[in-house]
Length: 394
Ligand SMILES: Cc1ncc(COP(=O)(O)O)c(C=O)c1O
Image 1 (tube, rainbow, N blue to C red):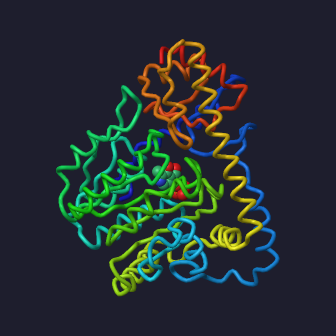
Image 2: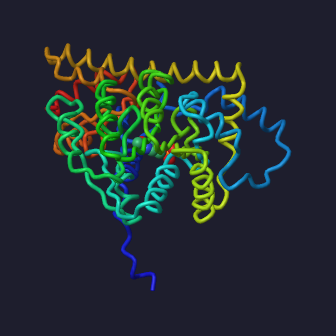
């Protein structure tokens, strides 16, 4: 019977990782995989996390199940981090999910339960999993323009034009900061204009917030999200601690649902519990406990914020240096976009042939859509990278 199932197409990024591993060239560079790497190419365990693990090891008396939605102390700490009191706590339902992906999935399922005929609007391009999950759970989706490949910046007017077709009760998936894969974010005034439009149309925002602290800083990155959550009667937020705490494999995510009032919040809290029950029963706890320990301890919070800020500055530094190197090489500022994009990713806008040349001729691995992860670079690699980009005709 099982032979009736057609396997899904292999994940392109996983294939790319494999090809990179098998490439014997010493100068090879992996700009594909979406994790942060330091100058030595390591995705480190943060010091604050190590310290929290010691404390947890010393103090934890049981590993019995948490509640179906995880620990309330984790919810409270994450709500403070993400929303910082911009919304009354009694309007927020929360669930610990396995990573930000679990939160995205749960957000989509929640909308599906409320309104199975709603259309989800997603950016073109977006994190590919948005489309895959929506397709898998059988929801309608439409894309809105997001990126202008000529200027390598946000196509805000194209976005607003496409959204004219959105109807009351539709949902829109927005990247809270550090848009994946483009690296191009809306300006705050564009966020405000968008919010006004969505509010007038009664379109429900789902904010995927996987990179808080990687763009302009922890507070700055949350500014647009907080504005939306404080204005709208309902907002869904999918948070992740994979990147900003480096807890990728511990699967630490959270879904926050801001509700119209505390009564609806009570119902939705039960819905989130049942959604976890139906798929995973109880969420993983270890990583969430670490985050709670860090966020509730002044000394560890300072240590974590310093480490995160160093990560952010390293990404920015690499961006600025690569853009400068390319300016020197080409005598033009056509790569200036690299310095203004936010977070780990930039969509370079190069052709599939150029992506292939980078890979085959120079051993530099980009995702097929031309996305680079700047964290795959370090200072020594920048001149080689810049020369290869020019050689490939980018
Ligand atoms: C836009 C976006 N959303 C969500 C996630 C979810 O990450 P995780 O499930 O590892 O927390 C990612 C990770 O790559 C992402 O890029």
